[in-house]
Amino acid sequence: MRNYHTHTFRCNHAEGDVSDYAEAAVAKGFTLVGISDHTPLPDNRWLFMRMGVSALPAYVRAIEEAQVQYPELVILKSAECEWAKEYNDFFAEVLLGEYGFDYLILGCHFFLYQGGWLSSHVDITSPKRLVAYTDFLVESMQSGLFSFVAHPDLFGLSYLDWDENTAAASKDILRAAEELKLPLEMNGYGLVDRRVRSKDGERTAYPWLPFWQLARDYDVQVVVNSDAHAPERIDQGLQEGVEMAKNLGLQLANLDHLARR
Ligand SMILES: [Zn+2]
Ligand SMILES: [Zn+2]
Image (cartoon, rainbow, N blue to C red; front, side, top):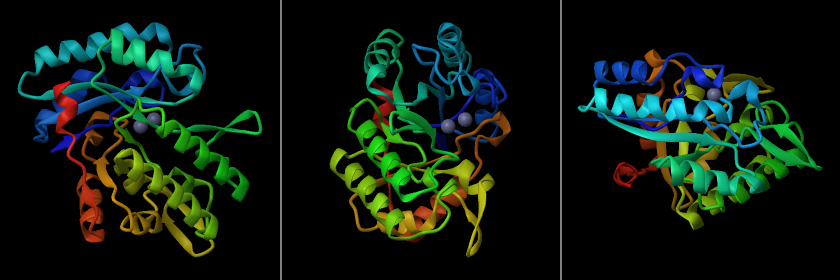
């Protein structure tokens, strides 16, 4: 088993350190775990859900120490990143460059709308905002910095009913993923823990089934991750996600290359 998406205590809304995840991974028979806490940002924006820049060296050290301590496990160094044009150099030169991160995940929790930032969790409440989220996500994908896209269908948390707007947004995201050959993540945390109530009743917020049904029409690859925010949840939703992808006939991505950078 493998999981490329995990968070430590440093982001202020998760538990455990890298060694705790390594311990849990070994106990549950994982061969690979990617540590991908919410990235610090050079301007220390959105600190309520991420480490500050000053915490970065200790984060990297914790990963490198665990790599030595757990030679039986492949531990990768990563971060889940909010993209913005002004962060390109930080991601490329500091994270991938100076600190030798194995890969970066795109996780779009905020997007630009009419000159200000909105939350992808709660603010996608109109077709216009959905278009803004989609455009920003696609622009982020085009940066070329990321190895896959976390929960691309996150809009399902606040845009409650499937309609022609969600279909159009999904097709734009899927088309970009196909063109850029960028795998899309089916998120285990969402699958297990994120439910919303819409006019047709309760459903999983994300992965949102109709998004992944549309994915069958595109040449896209899927990666299933737990997005664990606690060590004992390192495997949450993994089996269910793989089953869902297989039932839909979607192709699972091979990310072996990330371990060989
Ligand atoms: Zn998180
Ligand atoms: Zn995450």
